[in-house]
Image 1 (cartoon, one colour):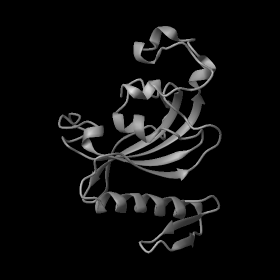
Image 2 (cartoon, helix red, strand yellow; image 1 turned 90 degrees about the horizontal axis):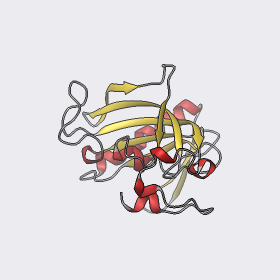
Image 3 (cartoon, helix red, strand yellow; image 1 turned 90 degrees about the vertical axis):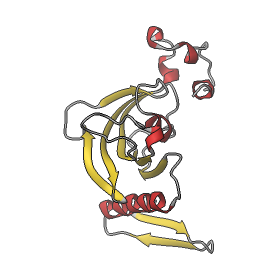
Image 4 (cartoon, one colour; image 1 turned 135 degrees about the vertical axis):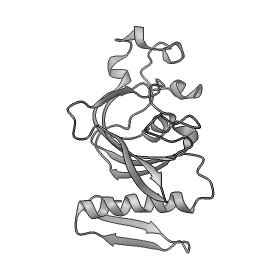
Length: 189
């Protein structure tokens, strides 16, 4: 999906197509449906499906960056969006997380990589990357695929705060800060 409410794609003959939409909402809704169709057409979902809805600005986030996120989560039911099981969109508090710290489900850790501040992304997350066979009592049944719309509202890059909160950094991502971002934060995942 491109800025100014249009979308481009290739068909199976590798022909390029463009669609213009009347509104940003229509373009975003179309993007969500494309992602759901991708999920429904894959024999087994074994990784996170990501679809950018808005690209955002600045640098893409990576492991170690601290984020404040607005999100809505749905159960994936009957080949589409089921009931909302969690959301902080109309609440005062954003979710704060440090990417790569293991405090959120693996599907978020993977699915949010590369997002930018102000960016919105649609994630379809298979059970193995979410709550697995346990589920969440009273909210997420066992072995449920989840769908999230996530928006990054604030970003604090790891290299801007290198070691300032050293006590909360786990040993695997605390090599001496270097001027060049390394992939160390991902290797042990």
